[in-house]
Amino acid sequence: MGKNNSYANANRAALAQKGVLALNFVSSPGSGKTSLLVRTISDLKDKFSIAVIEGDQQTSNDAERIRATGAKALQVNTGKGCHLDAHMVGHALEHLDVAQNSLLFIENVGNLVCPAAFDLGEAHKVVLLSTTEGEDKPAKYPDMFAAADLMILNKSDLLPHLDFDVGACLAHALRVNPRLQTLVVSARTGEGLASFYAWIEARVALARKG
Amino acid sequence: MGKNNSYANANRAALAQKGVLALNFVSSPGSGKTSLLVRTISDLKDKFSIAVIEGDQQTSNDAERIRATGAKALQVNTGKGCHLDAHMVGHALEHLDVAQNSLLFIENVGNLVCPAAFDLGEAHKVVLLSTTEGEDKPAKYPDMFAAADLMILNKSDLLPHLDFDVGACLAHALRVNPRLQTLVVSARTGEGLASFYAWIEARVALARKG
Image 1 (cartoon, rainbow over the protein chains, first blue to last red):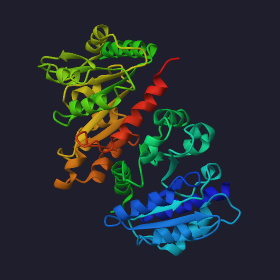
Image 2 (spheres, chains in turn blue, brown; image 1 turned 180 degrees about the vertical axis):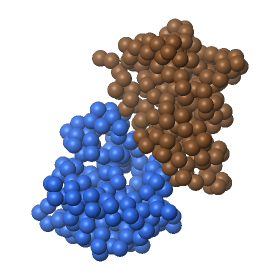
Image 3 (cartoon, rainbow over the protein chains, first blue to last red; image 1 turned 180 degrees about the horizontal axis):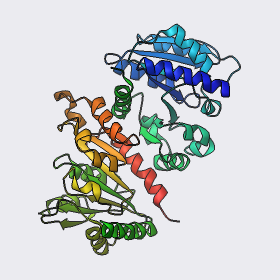
Image 4 (cartoon, helix red, strand yellow; image 1 turned 45 degrees about the vertical axis):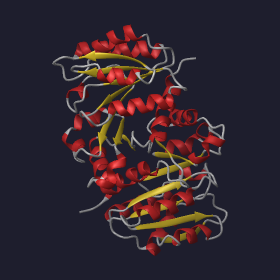
């Protein structure tokens, strides 16, 4: 773990030197990380240069979905590993050649436990939860919600068909992490994405150099 | 000021005892505080009991707009005063008879300076800014943005017609207050309000008693 942290610090320093904002997306499988990234890249690609590191145990399906948007994407297969680590991300950065003042999305392996403990050198962890999951997930997986700076509740378009209490869900999350920022979005309909893009844009402006 | 703080603490204790969540809305004149409250009350009134304290130098126009939604509202006229103080709010609370586990909105006098310094006993200050104002307002009025927990950028429906850089505006705000939460909404079209309502609902759940 100490080794991971020193790799993470090296990644962070390299990203800062280039003015790159790196976000580490974490969630259970199927909460919609790749769909959110595909839509976000399509909506923001005229404003920013965007690259993506895709983490999965196997397959390069997600990197292919990202590349279809025109963004650079590198797939990292973790094999038996349940999370990306900072050493893998450092290697990926060597290959990706991320542009000055750009945006780097890291999509972690779908898992609400292991990725919480691993700093990859990102500026922020963004945790996704979807309305089709249980609203007590933040209470059951507190480490992940404590490690994140932003929680995105995705699939808001399904709320009328579900018995999901948004307020109770976010209250669980705030008990674990009182400083957690929260947004309710639908990557399918676009609801709420204006606030997500504004959140990103403000942090890109802060990360930029010269 | 010490006197204001002791009144504020008394208000906060009285509200906590009843499980009431109190939000103090601050902004320049014309950024849309009353319109946002009218829409929010209409959308949430089936879920929560809501009461409003309206602060203005003169007139009771805003309290009348609020009462048209069916919510209880009390107008406080500050005369020459440029802000509500905790003593005024304490008096208003005696008259309003706020319900157990309810929601209290306090709409402050439209002013980006004076209300920043006055604790009214609220749980959070919510600062509104609209897209028709300058994007450097958070840099020019840092005390207000430092005192707030949530910033709402209103009138997002006008963005296509304006030369307003949302990312730069929020970056100004984050330089003043790195923990500030930010939402982009339109009280007119409803864009982004799902995240605002979720933000409120989570905090109501945390404030409630028994």
